[in-house]
Amino acid sequence: MERRTVLKAMLAANVVALPWSAALAAGGPLKVGFIYLGPVGDSGFAYQQDLGRKGLEHNMGQQVSVRVVPNIDEGPDAERVARELTRDGCKLIFAASFGYMNPVMKVARQNPGTFYTVASGYRTMKNFGGYNAKWQEGSYLAGIAAGKMTKSNVIGYVAPHPVPDVMWAVNAFLLGARSVNPKAQVQVIFVNSWYDPGKEREAALTLMNLGANFMTHFTDTPSVVQAAEEKGVWAISFHSDMSKYAPTKYVTGITHNWGDYFTQVAKNVMAGTQEGNLYFGGIKEGVVKMAPFGPNVPAEISALVKAKEQEIASGKLNVFAGPIKDQAGTVRVADGSVYPDAELGKMNWFAQGVIGAAGK
Image (cartoon, rainbow, N blue to C red):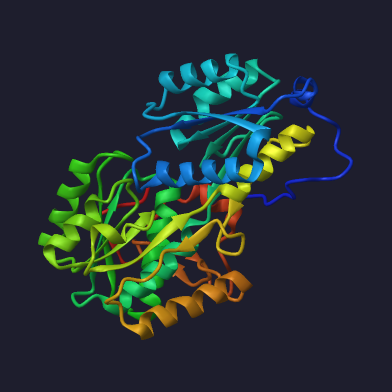
């Protein structure tokens, strides 16, 4: 099934109760499991997921009992842990990594009494869904700041894997930068890992040595921000507010916030109304938020970004409005058109201005 970013109402009326509601009828808290690829730490992807978990517990109180399992590799380990959580009585499991999708879906097929949902997942069935953030919205805003502040017109981008989620974030960043600086380029290095502090730092240093005087990333640790601070280079973080790692050169960060979504899914599971759908939240939904601006960012830049943020939230500004050309000069989005959300999961090309990486 192709990725479809369908925003459905999370609580629908007159829905036939699904299997897990019967299992909860006896009373007691809803057991909820969380599976993380890396450690929780104090920043990054797993940290933001865990803030969402804390939001769920705060909102639901004694109605839920939560178990967290960090540092689980994608593949067989994910399947094993999903089975363990299911046997432990979890009726809702959040698997917080794209690579968990297929192994956890295997478990879901065999356990219709539990609902499973996977971060960045795009496959669905009755008791299995996915959730994702509109990375393009925050990335575009971050790109505006970078385009305004770069001096060399080369922005370094440390990326994990060339998968659609990352590609549309990189493209949106480039488009944001070029909306205010047509000469801006985004130079990408892929480290082929979601979480590898050493590789992330090495890639950041390489990009700065190649002339990048502004840095950002899609990877999980503050390594890029730290390296930029050491070199006196402006930086924008991804996933979390990482300002404490760059006290003088931090600009802002693209964060994702899941507490409300996790809470609604838990309520739906308890009511027996949760469906196997795909959730896609952005600035309007409060899922994507920009971190506070650093103390040394010019006021006119923060004001511009905030103004464009309001335009995105209102629907006035669509990040992927045409014309957009790819690296080969082929028009991918015609003037007057927009690239639809439903096609983002198929994005396998980079926009003109992205260098050091190639689409398929």
